[in-house]
Image 1 (tube, rainbow, N blue to C red):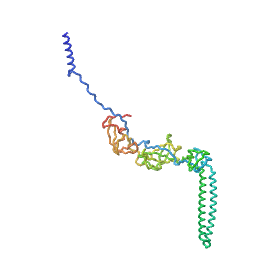
Image 2: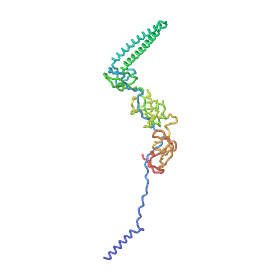
Image 3: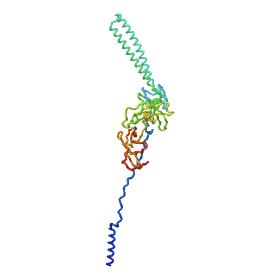
Image 4: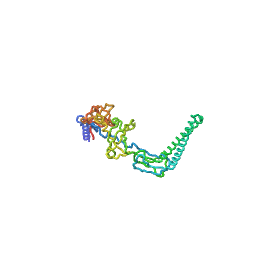
Length: 370
């Protein structure tokens, strides 16, 4: 029993010694080397010209002549001569009101004028006799002055009668609602028998032959637009083409949208059969207007503003070179909202990181993603 115990202890010691021996121990695994993963980026290439889509502005068609026609007299409507969609001419009667009372007023005013004219004629003859007698010394001066006063009173009464007759005739004219210009009836809010008063809306009228386009144009673009220039337009959503002539540029910039209102008259006869209606949405293409500046305002090397970090004309971009980021200093100028023109420091074949705000460093590994 004692021999077995000592042998077992010796074996245990040997095992412990073998386990603690430094010379024969297996080497400890080394720490894994940290490898930086490439940063995924999208790239863009400088464009030699701006796309036509960025030189367009969305606007709406409206009529230069549009009116709400209201009643100008009080009374019932006896006749409505037009309906919605009817084409009317200037001076055409659209609705007629009852004329009984105004016709009587006109007759009374006409009679009053006739009486005033007769009184004026009598006063004129009286004053002429008085003047002749006074000149010969046969009439006292007081009597002459009385005749003069009577004549002036008769003149004033005659003028008053003329004004009253004009007023009565104008009231009679106001019982007819007539078209102030050629156009199309767009709204009718009256019927025969309706009792109306001055200011009651009766019709909507629009001149469909004098249309204009109102388009809010970005402030960076508007200075290149010239009054009198022709611009191409397309009707939404059909895409039908038409032409318009720039009539005016707004004098103020909208503080919310940073746009300026541009008004362009639709050129009649050049809409190629397109039926433009007030309220329609259209797009105006200012490409032709910009290129008329002489040096090709729409030519150059252009990048999205998001790809360039700039302050004033100085800035930089990240260029992809052999799979790595390379900072490139550039000089730029802003030409349109969302786009800059690269003046110096970049070639046409460069691949530029599309988002300059990414946390990149020179030499950082990049992976271009689509």
